[in-house]
Length: 248
Image (cartoon, rainbow, N blue to C red; front, side):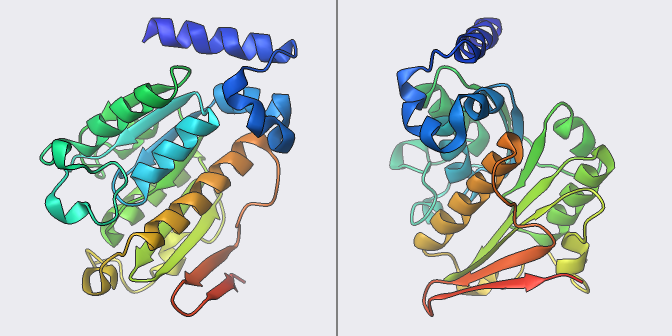
């Protein structure tokens, strides 16, 4: 771990001097060398490493976010194979966070991946999020989402929310003080899961939502672009609907 931190810092220093590693050259036209250096110097927590979180981890590792804390106490099962990019026949029964961290190591040695093979709850949420700049909500139940959102708000951290059900999904970014997930899930605070329990999750839905979440993280860390803030982006890939719902 010490070696990877030293290596990452040396890459950031070289980039500030104008030397861009080949692996990031296709990023530079969009986010610039300064933006890439900011990504490498950042830490992001991804809570949930399944359909949404597994792909968010993959995309952020390829983008060059320097440190990823991956939190998930669940293990891969056969029913994950239809949509979870990290699930394979070879890792059924293995912890999702541990598999995700190994995937990061195989993709990008600049990135330090920390696997936390535990479920997030009210007791550990703040300690799990310590030291990060952005939190990604890639969970699959409402109760834990609200616990995560409350912890992020207490720590003053932006939260990138994503949720999916069938061919529909939603993405939004919540900064401290913004209308948050309690607003979105008003009246559902006791619910474990939403409509996804009935509709399931075909593969294209988490792929699209996760890509949007990863882009939100990149926008926050680089300061480039406009986050989906004070509004929720809803999509339905079956009906070709992309719609914003604004919060007053």
